[in-house]
Length: 22
Image (cartoon, rainbow, N blue to C red):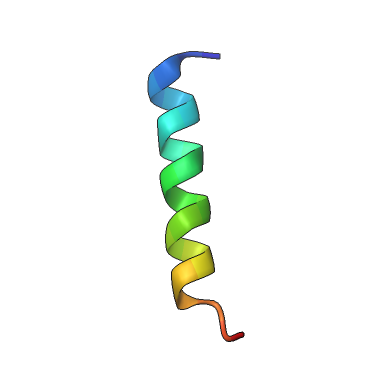
């Protein structure tokens, strides 16, 4: 895994958490 990949996954998780209800 590359840092860029991990950053993408982390970013996606943050966006999902921000838009997820609750």
